[in-house]
Image 1: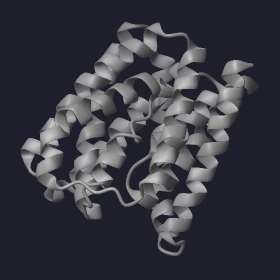
Image 2: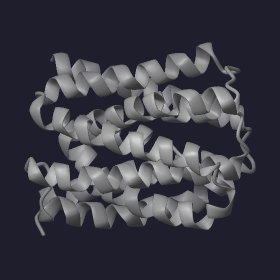
Image 3: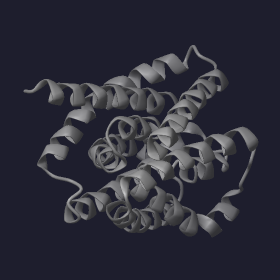
Length: 249
């Protein structure tokens, strides 16, 4: 194995480990950290392709583990199916739009997520209201996931606003992410954005993601949730600024 290939695997490992920490601590959000880090060193298209397989496996496992806590079927299926449709159209955008524009899109998406989290930490949404808008919310989130690899500004914010308990949140968002990944894989393959080498990267990436999820869960017991959240937001802000610099450089 060449030194260059070893270096690529090392960077992917670190990005996925950070994503696993976040997912273990809060139950979701691995792409929020992993995709910007991978995009910073490689490009957005590779970052999205590498994340699809670990996203699929980690969310299938998490969704099965907490399956009894899912929200009612009309909501869960509405979110997942609309997200899958959006992920398909977003993947086409990923294939056709130049990498620099995608890098800017990821950076702007991350900054928007940070701004929303800081500006509206207590935003709330009742279940009946959420059910009425679940399809458009899921579609927009899926589009973001397909095109930039990050749906958190819509998906996580949407579910957080419903004030769900942790198990219901985990069970519902896992179905959403898993179904989007199922759609992304064939679309990315059809457009030449995924091959057997990237499949190997993705399978290998499952290891650090799953390995560091328990670490994040453990750390979350001792670090105040608000402090942990602010640390992650600060890290994302630095990454986003660096991505904008790279895209415009």
